[in-house]
Length: 135
Image 1 (cartoon, rainbow, N blue to C red):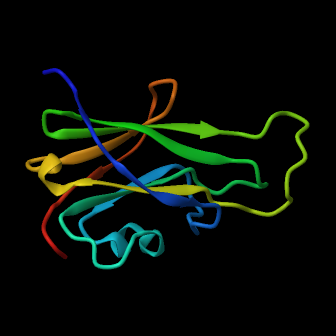
Image 2: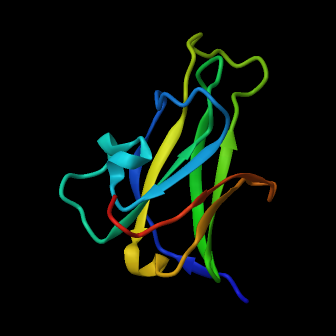
Image 3: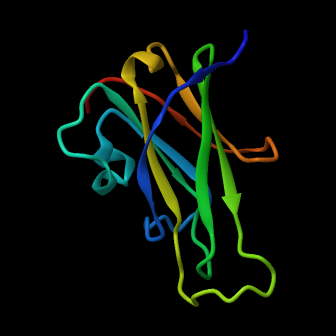
């Protein structure tokens, strides 16, 4: 089966997502359930919100940026770039937790079972089960 591109809306990024673990992905029709609900506009319906987390970092200078979303059968593949500060770069000395919230039309996720987070090298970083039902 050929992967089909899915248009997504970027709702913003944060450096303080509060994710103490490693890279992770969350998906819900309720933005608040992704952990990044504060980035979503109020009252938006008919969307599947997808949060991508880079995990806890020891300094500033780290980011995660969703580059594309593809549908491949019953799977969404979320491709993201994980950026680290350059060696020797001056960075703020504070623990950060970079993350980004995006959304896609719920209709684009009909019958999708899972979302997989893939980095720029093609390595899988995380996966999550997807449900379009309201919690």
